[in-house]
Amino acid sequence: MLVSCLYALGALSLTLSYSVTRIADFSIGEYITIGAYIAALGTIYGLDPYISLLIASIAVGGLAIAVDEAIYKPLYWRGCPALQLLIASVGVMLVIRYI
Image 1 (cartoon, rainbow, N blue to C red):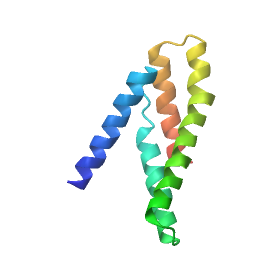
Image 2: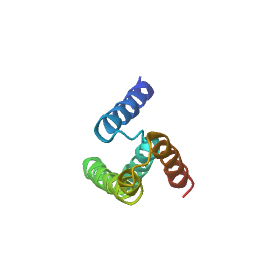
Image 3: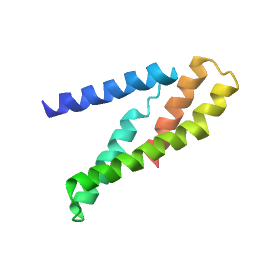
């Protein structure tokens, strides 16, 4: 049941992101994974789980905003079609995954 809730969370965030920005941002899974690792490490090192969750949320939100400002907005303002934005999204996903 927990795994299905995590899948639903990822699908919901992808849907909301697409409906707001009109960019299919496939790096949502990487954002969720990074946030989970940050929260887990914070908890392991003795932080309160709620504070750990808050720190992870702020860190991942900052990462998402930085990626949007550095990658997607310049492409969007140049008038790139949706397919090129999709390819850029897959590229961002791979870069984040392998960093």
